[in-house]
Amino acid sequence: MPELAEVAFACSKWDAGLGKKVIGVFTHPTSRVYRDESRDSFVELLYKSTLLSSHTHGKQMLFKFSGNIFIGLHLGMTGKLILGPKNYKQQKHDALVIIQSQNSLVFQDPRQFGRIRIHKEKNLPSWWRNLPPSIIGKNFSSEILESAIYRHKRKPIKALLLDQRYFPGIGNWMADEILWRSMLNPAKLCGKITDSEINKLFNEILFVARGAMKSIGVKGGDPPKTWLFHKRWNNGNLCPKTKTALVRETIGGRTTCWAPAVQS
Image (cartoon, rainbow, N blue to C red; front, side, top):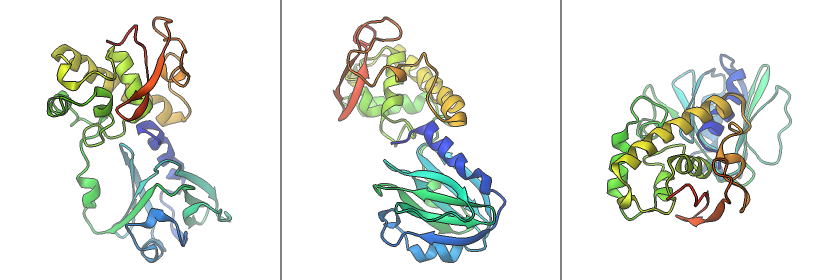
């Protein structure tokens, strides 16, 4: 599933449509991404509107159109945004196609685990206003991390980092990267983590999140070559720090890569 920076890069695909009017809308007649909404409302509300802005928050996207219209979008496992030509031909897995005078803005989701919402009101929709503080925003603090750790003392720290209620945008590879840099065993229970480890963990959350945004979020692709990311896919690969073997195992319900020689 796309994580913080991948979502930001995906969102930018539609930026070519900013300031341009919608001249046509196609909604897939059976896609499950509309499980919260009426397909007809997208056609009725978006037609002749203008795309004004785009935003991301963790794994969520928000697009604002003229007329106080907002679209919320979550890519799910296989969703992606595409910028197509104005004469774009609809494909089998296109959930939504927004046609403009020069481009087509396409949301494609083969497995239909994504989600799309629409909202018409002057104020931001509640499902956007009520999101937790962004981990790359000024309101994300060490107190949020401390509170989450103390509240879930019996949970492995890897599982906690994946909890979107506290750390929106952190997914599997980012959690592994953060814990490797923090020298924390991903299976370590939150109740066993010391104050000094919490401080280091908080700093590494910021480092990985900001570093991912500066690399993947801007250009797509992968993070810097020195990151664990490039070694974590195969059991037995070598730790970039110590050149000792990496281990892959299931922790907190997710496949996890870690370096026993570094992470205690």
